[in-house]
Amino acid sequence: MSDPNALPGRSQIVQRAIADAGLGATVRELPDSARTAAEAAAALDCEVGAIGSSLLFLSDGEPVLVMTSGRHRVDTDFLATQLSASSIEMASAKQVRAITGQAIGGVAPIGHPSPVRTVIDEALNDYETIWTAGGTPHTVVPLTFDELVSLTRGSVLKVAAD
Image (cartoon, rainbow, N blue to C red; front, side):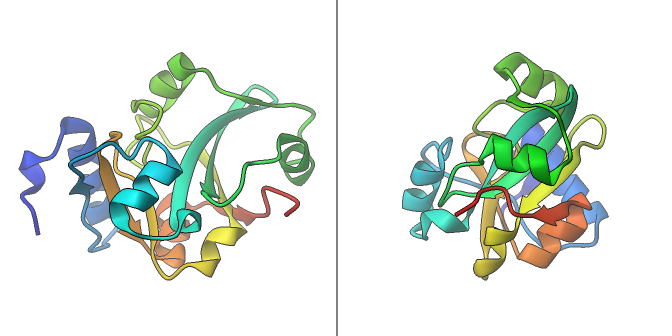
């Protein structure tokens, strides 16, 4: 296990949240960017679908973090129906930073200044290990589907019609 104090500050916050939840997962720093699902999958030598991409949306103006499988895109109309929302729009980079404390491409499922309502793509349950961002575009965390659900207290939903 690497030294958690050697991690970037944002990733240290994520690692503490994981430990506080009683999980043994470890934030790992990658030599190259894992900003996109394709970059992360290449760096980790895994299927792109096993990458849990973190996307922040505003559902009727309220933030919702969607943890989606890298194998497809979130269908915002479909998601709006799932959430009984009249509108779903992608948050701006400034909103992402303000709400999560993390930059686009590195948003972890946890470690935010305050809890964010989370939706977890049911497609992620197809993978034994899900790789999520660890607070920066160069850090990742391996989690099981059940750990991700437990850690985020997220709602498991379909986020795309495929």
